[in-house]
Amino acid sequence: MVRDVSAGATDVELADWGVTRNQVTGPSARYRIVQGSDWRGPVESRYLQLWVRGPGDEPTRTLSREAGDLVITIPRTPALPKAAKVREYIRHGEERNEHRRVYTGQRKFTTSPSAYLNARNAEPEVALALLNSTWTYLAALFDARSVGTEGLVRFGGRGSWRRLHSIDPGRTTPLQAADLTDVWSRLAREEVQPFPPEGGEPLGGARRELDELALQVAGVEDAVEASELVDELYEWLPKFTAERADVEA
Image 1 (cartoon, rainbow, N blue to C red):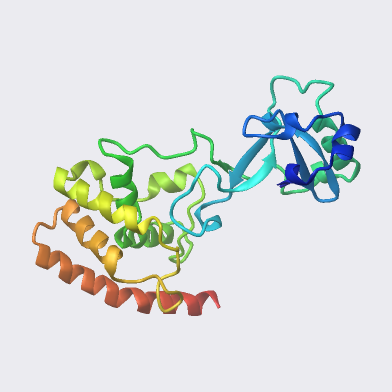
Image 2 (tube, rainbow, N blue to C red):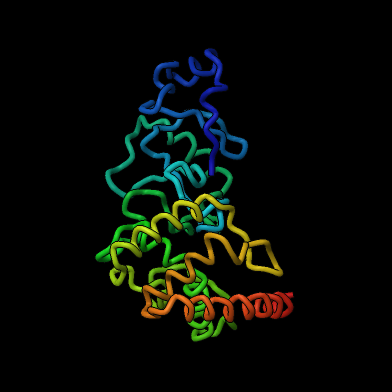
């Protein structure tokens, strides 16, 4: 992981590195001056990518293209040019055996355009809303138990997501889709917190609207019945969260 320190580079430093101010300025800059551990210098912008470990890295439910850590990423092909500035960074790291450490290459998730889930027969906002409902959390608990994690929600790969049961966004009516989109626009901006009593995630407001809507999409047509089921869920959830906290302690 590195930090972009281009703005703080002096003209003398840039001259020593053989780059100009114009080459490290602006969104399409050819180079970036980065700081990585005790190394500082220019790296080609095309070798810099933003990487994230998972949703827990971000304070809200919305993952922007500016999210994540700045990481130097060298593709296997084509071969790295002999004159590439990034070679100095690699040389510095190899002298310190950084390339032999166990964490090298372990991150899997990026903010690249291919790193997302496509919703089938629905708009992304509708699918995202349903995926963030408390019912999906409940489903994840039981799916996690099936692989021996004692009810803990730990999803980290494609296989885990394929195992997760969620409500089909393609079942929504136009009115339900509009309501879910509205709920998601509010929920997405809220801070992500653990459920009570461990944390302060509110069991009301936009979340309650979402959970009642999710049940109606799933087939519970009576709004009163959906509300009563959400009452039962919210009564059970804090008790379970407290029990889980005791187990993990």
